[in-house]
Amino acid sequence: HLLSSSMDKTVRLWHLSSKSCLKIFSHSDYVTCIQFNPVDDRYFISGSLDAKVRIWSIPDRQVVDWIDLHEMVTAACYTPDGQVGSRLMCIHFSIQKFNF
Image 1 (tube, rainbow, N blue to C red):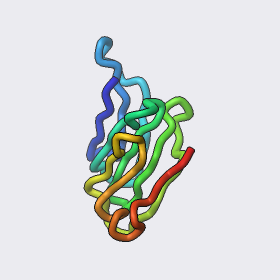
Image 2: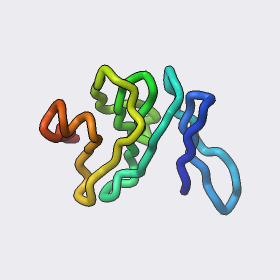
Image 3: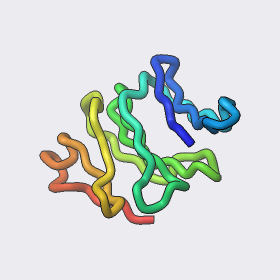
């Protein structure tokens, strides 16, 4: 599977062998960064110019957690153990952790 983000304010989940879009995850602004959770691929993280970092459940097609950083998000990622980090979260929140 592959995730793509776009200026159309969506994240799309693709199945590579069939080249078809399986699911669309809508945002309120441009999506600037995405990443699958490295320990549980049922989840992914997205960052957007709307200043929010979101954790999405792929099976439920909905946001399960989010944080508003009050500045546009241009980079966010999971650490190898599945925790969430971004430059702003580290500065403002001393590394915010999301638990499921």
